[in-house]
Amino acid sequence: MPIYKYTATNIQGKKEYGMREASDEEKLHELLKAEGLFLLTCKEHVERKKKYKLTAMEISDFCRNLGSLLGAGVDLARSLQIISQRDVKKHIREIYNEINMKIRQGMSLSDAMEEQGSFPELMVNMIRASEVSGTLDKTAMNLADHYEKDEELRLKILGSTVYPIILLGLTIVSVFIIFVFIMPRFSDIFTGMELPLPTKIILGLSNLLRRNLLAVFIIFMSIIFVFAIAWRFREFQVLFDKAKFKIPRIGKLLRIIHTARFARTLNSLYSSGIPMIKCLSIAKNTITNRFIADQFDRVIERVKSGDSLSTSIGMVDGFDIKLSSTISVGEETGRLDKMLEATANSMEYEAEAAMQRITTYLAPALVIFLAVVIGFVVMAVMLPMVNLYRYRY
Image 1 (tube, rainbow, N blue to C red):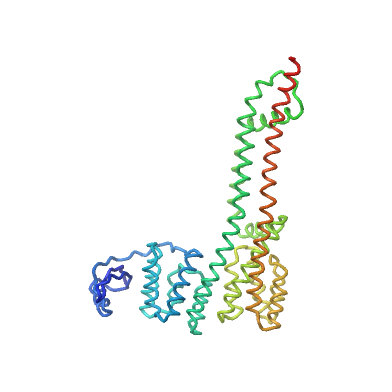
Image 2: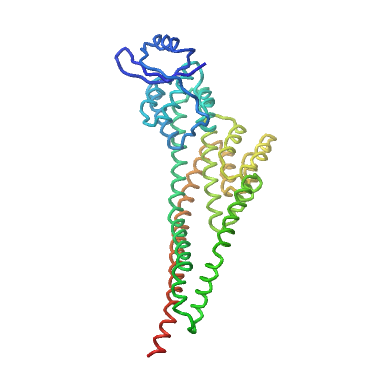
């Protein structure tokens, strides 16, 4: 049955926009009329082949608006209609209108989200659990906080890495320009002169790079090509993600970040009343490190067989050691949700502090390295000129 995008007016003459499934335009007119709406224009909606995945902040905004409206006593269908009219992005409005259409046809919100395909599994399952418990407004607000904090952590990570990456890029480009374009200009000047060791080293490296520039480019592109081919295999991705934990300082930071995200995700799911086995299955799909994710089938099996969650999580290589001990305390006191939330907050604070420390040390180190390279080149250029000046005078 086709889906129509329509524009209609209500009794007060206010325009309303939406989507509705109907056999034809005449049937659409009848359906809207039954709701007190008068059809103005309609157009058959062509389904997109690829579903747009909402970003963390888009989900957070949606959930916060939904929670506020539901908490104020507005019914679900009307809440979705209001939210869709607020959003200025056309493709997001279409998603909300599609959800609203499915709800008007009798679907639950969670089923409508799952069928629509733009919402993450974690959100769908938390909404489904809240529909059973009757706490949809509170769960929506909890989801808003969850995705907002997740996005804040992502932006902090991005902000801490951008400056060092830019510095590293500038360092590589500067060294390349010096050796390929600047030093060859001095090569002819120094011909026939007795050169000091620093100058010989710089000119030698410059000549080596220039003469083998094509070979260097081919080797560089070959490495990228081989990496791209290897990345298609799951086994390589797992090994690559595992190797990240071996990098000094960076490895520890990654453990903290993954621990914080997992603790917050598990807390959000468990607090919604979802059974622990289901929580672990959903949380597994949110873990971006494949090495950690691949260990979760064993964790789930151990919990199913009767092992405690803390013992099972303690077997995972990739999480901070504090996680299992915190979960153990939560199991003993019956306050697992509170302990998971405390762990997430603590780990996020540690991650932010660690990122600041790394940035504090790495950025000056790159600047010093660039200064040393440029200083060495300047010295290599100036020494022959000083010797030439002394020889003449």
